[in-house]
Image 1 (cartoon, helix red, strand yellow):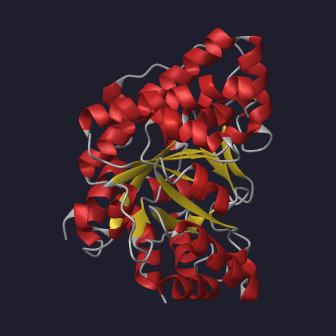
Image 2 (cartoon, helix red, strand yellow; image 1 turned 180 degrees about the vertical axis):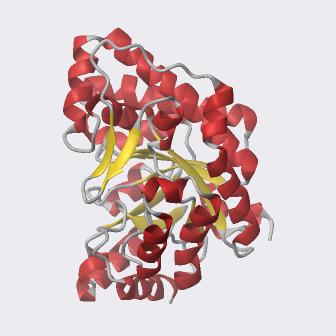
Length: 343
């Protein structure tokens, strides 16, 4: 099947499809017993990310089990700072760790040759996936957005990371801005290489965009995303791009119009009825089911699925969660979700 004919790509290019395509953020992960077994075999999370065979297998597991309309490359947003020379490791049960940067530190150098050499296993996984996925299943590449990456680089961990980055951006905006711009340069080139390797769409995750004050939103979320979009489009003008500035409320509309992305992924705090009016006339909407429904299931799950479908199925729409599926999710609830969407 040609890329243009795949359900996800049709929706991302503005088509209203008879049944919306569906995939779930973090659909490959700890809620699946086969994933837990693979991670134990790999000997750690980063070993999964940097082993193309393991990354392909992790990506394929939810496709085999559920038949989603799209797969998303199994990797992590922190491979970008890792490729820029920052130490990255994962503490069991606690998440990622980095050596934190200090206020005023110069941004890491971006040297394309070692950067792409470090990420070669990721590109190999993308190529392997295009060869392994069912013909109808689209392949999504991704990266973290500069602001979200900077929050981890400033704090060195995934707890209260926004505070360190916010302190830096107000104390020394010149050096923090230089870090953001360097990350935008690296992310743009990273996404181009994923598309070169076979990704058919890409998503930019700005998971901590909601921590930005309105006065900082344009400089640290909108502007770097716009720069990434322009970089990617210069090399691959037809590849759809999704943005996910989580937690920004009504500013989703400004983000969609200003950045040039094809569509936005919405967190569960946004009304689907508002999104239909404010966003769908300007691009594709993706989202935005409460992830807890994948844990609890039942009638509440079905009611919220029906509400989202009723509000958003009349325009370009991709069904997804409002954030990633959690380790406590029950695969049976994913099956119930898919039955409800597909009829």
